[in-house]
Image (cartoon, rainbow, N blue to C red; front, side):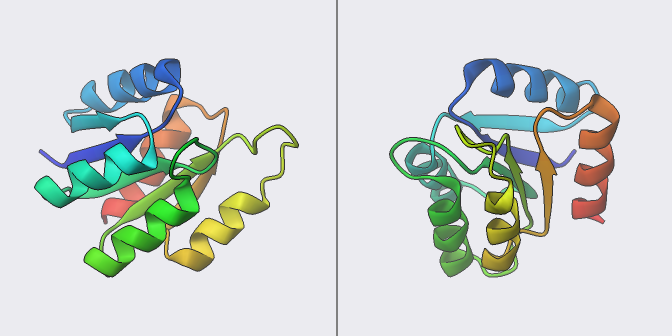
Length: 121
């Protein structure tokens, strides 16, 4: 059973994504921002990290860079709704920083599962 770390500051997004993944047999741990996510990442291994980009405290680009320093081959999926300006260039920046793939919010269950499967392949 793949273990996924889900980092997102929106509680409803975490709940929804968690339920989608758990229904497919994934084990999901949650963090509400990049700082908490990095703390969890340092404590145990994960098969995949899914991180939002626009978050308070430690945003997603910083989180991806920090994870890459700790474990360069970690599989990371970047998700974002683009923030206030709906600028989805954040997702392109995330891929440049080392995210394996990206997914724009809102996304469907099938879109999420497809990208997660691709990231873990």
